[in-house]
Every structure is written in C-alpha cells, then in structure tokens.
Length: 85
Image (cartoon, rainbow, N blue to C red; front, side, top):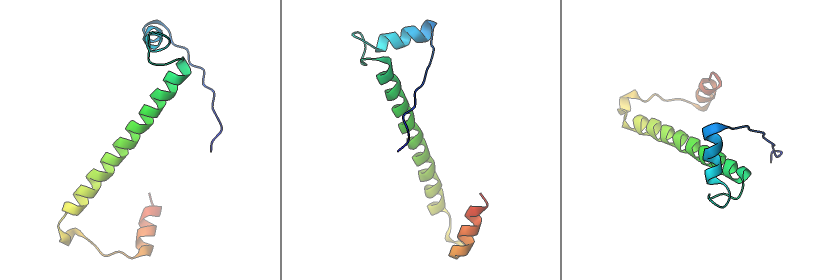
C-alpha cells in the first residue's frame, strides 16, 4: 500500500464559493478533505469506466472481424509483439 499523501490546494473566487457550498452544514461533506477525496474517487472510477469501454470496443471490433483476418500466433510471437509497445 502506498504512503498517505498530503496535498495543499488554494482556490479562490467562484471555486472557493463552490467548494463552500458543498462543505459544512449547507453541504453534503463535513470538510474539504472529505469532498476532495470523493472527487478523486469519482474521477478514478470515471477513468476505469473509460478504459473498460475502450477495451469492450476493441474486443467487439476484434470479434466482428471476419475469420480470414485472424493470423495464427505462437506465445513467443505475442510476447515479442507486446514487448515492442
């Protein structure tokens, strides 16, 4: 597990007002740290959904290709191809 990280972020103006509206008695979060952690979690989940959607699209395309497009490969060929990038 990685070490905890401390972040210092300065926001002002409209961003500060936006954060204040979401924190404390008026908001859904008890403090700014809780709000930021939730934003990071949601962004992480969004990135994971995007990667999964890309993988699904690639697999859908691969399975839709005609069988004549497929080429036999042995394990060494796959490893060599993936090592190149």
